[in-house]
Image (cartoon, rainbow, N blue to C red):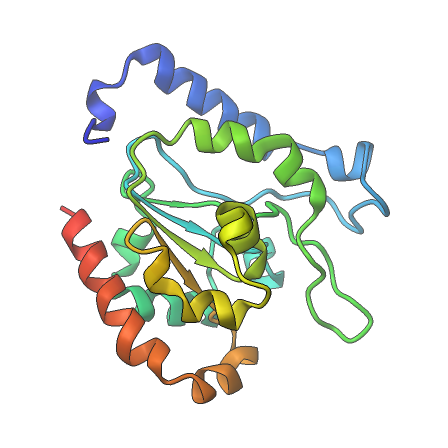
Length: 211
């Protein structure tokens, strides 16, 4: 778990680079979709390196991230970086932090203008392969219910609030959080313990893993 990128065999580095190339070229949600095809051209967004000790597992890119091609380039990203207590330079250093949503492409909008759920194709096609290529992960932030259910499995509770409330059961390997979207401002007001109890422990953990 303490190996660094520099000492990974060249073949392993090449295999991981090839996997990321394949993901970024993926068109499965259009060419062979589960349900309705993606309503626009795919643009998979993620960052990862086999040396990363920290991972952020979220939901799916929104409209701004779809446009930029870079994870969390929106107000949600600003709030998330504040939650974690890290600078943009560290946040976007793939050697330190992997950012891998459950769905790699912006899934489109529903009738009310909200984001649709992550595409099902992504997890079934790629997630096991990506996780197998990240041998050094020590702490994973599970942003939202989709990531929590996949990574925690039967240990996840029935609701996001129950899962996040039980964060001590999963730490320090996993820290479940709500999505940092403004849509969850009400949730944050109703659950002040998230910022007073969970976030200080999470920040301390991350700072201990970052050089």
